[in-house]
Figure 1 (cartoon, rainbow, N blue to C red):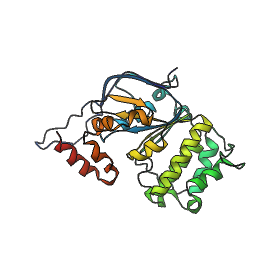
Figure 2 (spheres, one colour; figure 1 turned 45 degrees about the vertical axis):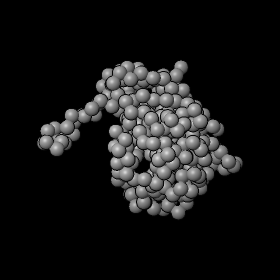
Figure 3 (cartoon, helix red, strand yellow; figure 1 turned 60 degrees about the horizontal axis):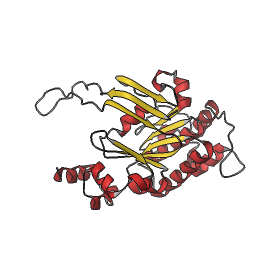
Figure 4 (cartoon, rainbow, N blue to C red; figure 1 turned 180 degrees about the vertical axis):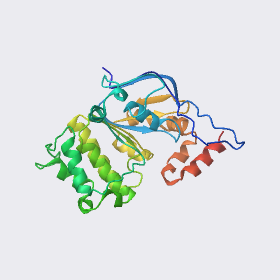
Length: 278
């Protein structure tokens, strides 16, 4: 059984009310996927790589059942995630969105304990690196000790990201889908988190699919890479197989020599450079 199967999937976002072009005409969204079919294996830490707008976020949302395809079917571990009741869906697949918002005033430590006890692990999992408990270990790995008595809504973007990463592991879902979960974190925190995520999937059998912009981090930590090209063509393999200069130039549509500077550029700068070569 394939870990993830897309069978003749089509999906288009609905029009946004009031969204018009420069001529005042309603903007008609273009299909993100049209009759897309593909199968991917599970196991390990998989990085999704490609330029903005290539379909990475939509792929994650369809794969986890947070979006329903217009036609076709998506199956995750043999199940249709979009059709499952909420609790079953969450146990099958946790999701970290790019801009998660919270309206609770509960303290961060209380929320961590609630997530840990209510999920598949039932608050009883052992740590990976010691004889202690998983909650204590993850609290340390993601540097949450100083945040436990503070409400989640009072945290910075980077602090919230670290807490949400902890949520995703403590809940104990079979799979975790992450959409740019670390963009606001410090570099050393990203490295520490990715090192632990890679260890986590190896020791627990969890599969993690994670979109990231930092190519160097994907090369260093990913077990596999799903590379998105323009036109929804994709390539799957190890970082060595997929993240070649030729494939990256095809995916990002900018000269290969520019890619090593990509992480230091704004999205606007990248777009401007790409437009020069079209």
